Length: 251
Image 1: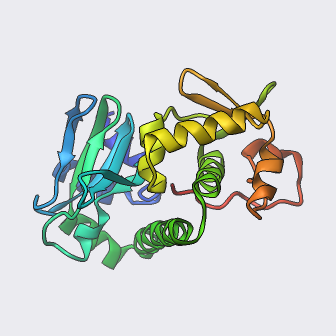
Image 2 (image 1 turned 135 degrees about the vertical axis):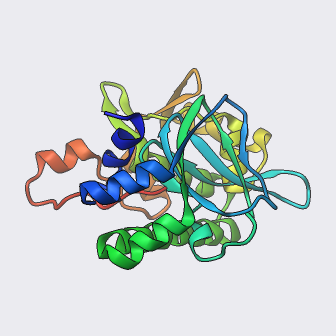
Image 3 (image 1 turned 120 degrees about the vertical axis):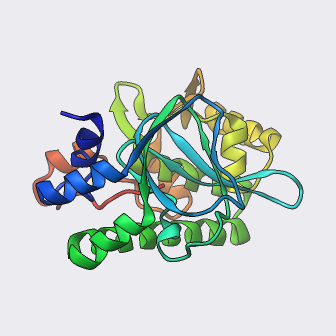
């Protein structure tokens, strides 16, 4: 099986395409590889394609007027990004950078647009993806405006748990490694402030930090401290049959 075919069939957005539709998409797509720290696209690049990440991790960010990164999203394998090209067709407006060695499939925007017209599930999937990302950014903007650095960081930790959390004997581990600077870029703070707040939470017994891996030892208490409901992890849902399928997650 061609690797592009495998990538496409393992993306939920394309899993119900006919063999003919998948073959056409496969033929017109290109596999690209990027080393850690490489820029995948930058503002002013032409938005002529949609990208499907197959391995690695990608971060999407803006550069503020002060020259700081403002991190907008983390992209994981199986996720599309650069989807605004479908409706804009102009230039990119943000940076996309490989956080690890990454492989992606570059799909012409015209191909996705044709599928959206002929395949309602693809159209619905793209629309849902854009809606989820917009709501995520809106929530983060509200958090930046009305919450303290501590509250913003706790909110972010809950978001990360919702997408990457897994239970361990010590607590809930966030299964993605982010530096203090990465966390600061997301919540609109400074690395020094994030370091201080994490130190306070560690001293309170709310979390552990091991080689940039954060483990929440008091997740429920942290969530309640910012008036949030604790995230439901996949293992929790499996243990409780009254809970429906987990909603699609998007950081």
